[in-house]
Length: 181
Image (tube, rainbow, N blue to C red):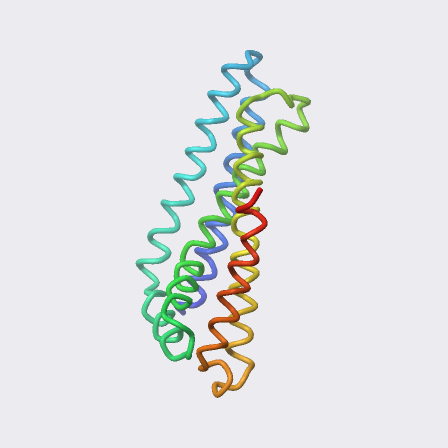
C-alpha cells in the first residue's frame, strides 16, 4: 500500500509540474507579443512549476515515511558514513531535481518551437541545466560505481583503508580537470 502511494506521488511529482509549465508557457507565447512580458511570464511559470514540485515533494517524503526504511537499509551496509549520507540525500532530492530539470526543459522546448531564441530566460535556463548537469553527472556516476563496488565486492576487500583511499583519489582526479579549467 505504501509503495503504491509512493509510486503514484512520485509520478505526480514528475508529471504535473512540467505539464503545467508546458501548457502555461504555450499560453504565454500565444497571448503576449512583448519580449519583456514573455520573459517575466516565463520566469513566473518556472517558479510556480518548481513550487508545485516542492509542494508535492514535501508531503511525499513526510507522509509516506520513506526516510526511516531508507536509513535502515543504508545503515545495514558497510559503506562509509559520508557515502551513506550522500546516497540518502540523493534518494530524497533526486525526484525534486528531476522535476526541476523537466520544468526548465519544457519552457526551453516551447520557446524553441515558437522561434524565440533570444529570450534571456531561455539562455539562463539552459545555462543552469548545463551547469547542474556538469556538476551532478560525475558525482552521481562516481557514487553509483562506488556503491556497486561496495555491494558486489567482498567485505574483506572493501573494508580496507586502501580501498577508500583509492576511491577518494579517483574522486579527486575526476574533479581535478574541472577545477583546473
